[in-house]
Length: 295
Length: 295
Image 1 (cartoon, helix red, strand yellow):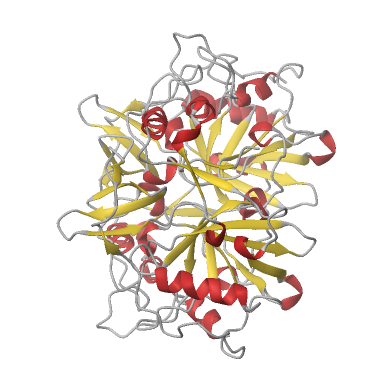
Image 2 (spheres, chains in turn cyan, orange):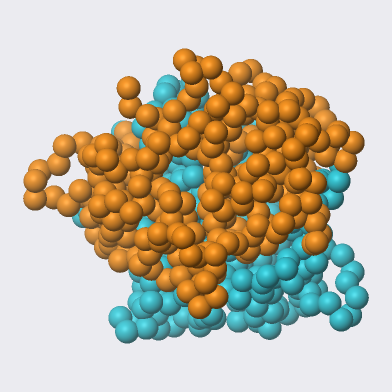
């Protein structure tokens, strides 16, 4: 199939390139030195086990929503999600899950009404600018391994609703959501939700176990009946898992030279397939590289 | 479930609102007068029938890639896709299908090497500007019902790789693809492909029949073996289908007052759920409304 070869060219495989050729984003990631990667702390990993034992791993973002993240840790430690399920899959939007928050009491340590952690002070963040315009904020970039939008005048910054990012379901304001009901983005970034919801995490492994689920047929992608719900058998923090079985991940330091080169290459694709590099890139099209910790 | 109610607020249902409230995007679409909708010609509809009889309907874009679109019409009329299959599903990227172009001869009328229809003259297009910055082009907007990026200085315009847009697989340049192998976008818009590939259509019904398919496990989302391929049983133009069974769709006139109001509302969400409207919107987050023709 000639077109299979053509399709392969759509995203070139990692391969040794002649010295004269510009490196592809994948080649830059593969060549990044150990010093350009940061460990994800075990207490920032949240491991969901779906029916059948398949896992979805998330990285929590305590620097952006500390009270919501503390709640999520307490919910995991208290086993609150045992028996939870995925009950909503809306195409090009979100997958959502939870555990009947209105009737199941929270474990100790959960703050029932957290503050509205929808943005934070820009101060204290080292931001690598995206270098391309953003439709939703005065500026965009990357801080501590996360995609952020920010407002230099207001001095605020917020996590962006990019693909695979995880937010907290809430009722109408002033409700801010506890963290018990969460959603992951599975479509074109719904950035209009930025600064309106607490963004608390991103899926770093197994997003396709959410994004390929059957879409719900009711309004907003809710499943028609409980027989379609996808059970979640267990949710644990990385720090609760015995050392031998504990997952270990790293993200690329967004202040590193490797990330700078990666970002530039994402904005200027020069692989053999491309005839016109864009000269720019969307915040959500330059996903921060994450990998399993090498042995 | 309290959070089900919360989730419902994520995209408000179409509902009667008090007069003082700003209309939601959905309310604007529902209230758009008949005069603000345009019929899609039957010869611009391409109906894929998947195994089991489920359909995926596409709208062709002859104003942007006339030779490729003429090829696609000739391939459909010649029954060339009968026995074709979906063989690639890459998460957050594309679904791709075709029919072994290298061994199956084309029907009469197919141009084997079409011109590189990757952009066109801006002249002749009535463009409604997006009103927000774009990371990939000097300007973006909507023309003839389609999302476009354009360069006022160069005088060019191109279809944008938004969610559900369909492009033509090709080999390395100077190959431009015949139209026999096609892909649909199922993730965050891969706009770096803009101006590098012929964009020829968009999925207007049944995108979830593509986006929820199991992801391929091989590099770039190719299915590991043919047993995973999804057979396409028939592909027909709307104009080939008997009048009684022929699908009929309309898109919102992107020059209409309704579209202007819709675009403004997408950029300034003021539904009860939102506490901070963004004041901007991404080109691919203001999908042109398409509906079945009302009876």
